[in-house]
Length: 298
Length: 257
Figure 1 (spheres, chains in turn yellow, cyan):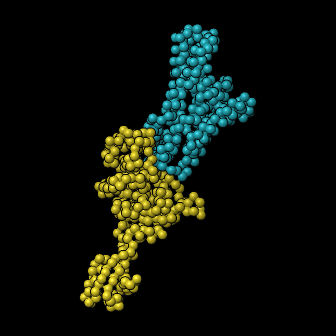
Figure 2 (tube, rainbow over the protein chains, first blue to last red):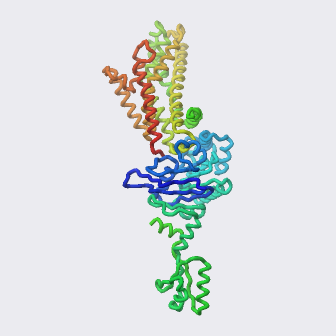
Figure 3 (cartoon, chains in turn yellow, red):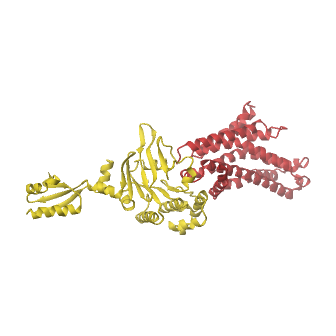
């Protein structure tokens, strides 16, 4: 089931400078959806459109099959969000901030200690949020987003400004909540490696356009298609005729054929060796995910 | 539907005000007029002795109210609107507030209720302190004549209600301004100009002064009438209602965060 869906979502401040162009997002229930794109790609703007903080110029947003609008209150009871820099009352303590969140969502006081434990802030609960480190602020923001046990959590660059330890903790927490409580996450990031490690699905946005959308496996399959096997032999002509089905090309003194799988590499090597050809080198090269990401957004 | 959210919204706004200057201003500011008059009476007792012949309490209370209205109240009302709304700007929390399961209108109304409640609380504290100051003066020097009279509570009540209504116009302007402008200095600058201009306009008996909101508190202390509310007080109420409706329509349609 699709939990969050946008249709031809568009936004601009000036008509000749569109920020989000006709975006069709589909976030499956139970997924961790990575919304990937370089800085300034339109990620935060898209998230604000989804949450109704910006009014779309055209297009629709459906969450749990409903548009915001008259259902705002009911829908926001099921959504938690953390947008850009955390929204915290810096003159109040961590606990007082959560008290505000609790009143907004009408949840019992016991939830405060539960979420504090969840994000590991029990020791700092009575400290003013203004005195928190960036990582702690980020975690308090997450605690506020999780307090009302939402079914969908939207996080905008949640690991921004965190140290490596904090990034790993945040990632593990998201995965754990997704696994144990079935919470769907929509997480924006400009780091491919992070999305690859954490997410089940990915949407790649660049200059306001959604360039790819699918599961991580689909992304990896698409990436595999861009990889090549480089083969160096003592007899390229004979090798070329043996591999003719793969339409080998001669590039810089080596034969190249498209990579499909590791099994294909072994079979290819086997057929060359049994034909009596000496194989000096078999090398898989080409776009890894990082390069492919760069190719997509170039 | 909306009404059911308002008590909770009001409570949340109280939670947000903890440890803020708005709260301090409400209490410390209440000391302003009584303290000035108290010091005045002590340093120049003869200005206080005049009260012995009429009603020492009413004279003292009236003078406290004059200082309060001329110098303190318009700024205080402006500052309360600015400081309370500015909590959201400063904390970067508009986007948080507007993604909560709470109607935007209840957020808007909750803040107004808090601001106006604090202004009323200020009036209560200010008047209590005025009575305390008078009581201490009575103990220090019996020539003031406080012991021979009792304060007219109906006058105090009338002062509170009329001045409160007269500040609503300014609240209407500055509540909306505060949601629009992050900077707290700009609204204060506007208020300063408005207040200075209002004394000029009153002195020159400008014929449209009843429509100039910064002049309303001063007008309320000057205009004598048999009607409980006079023209500028009705205008003040009108401004408050109209500007709040427009301000709400503005914020509910605006791109926030």
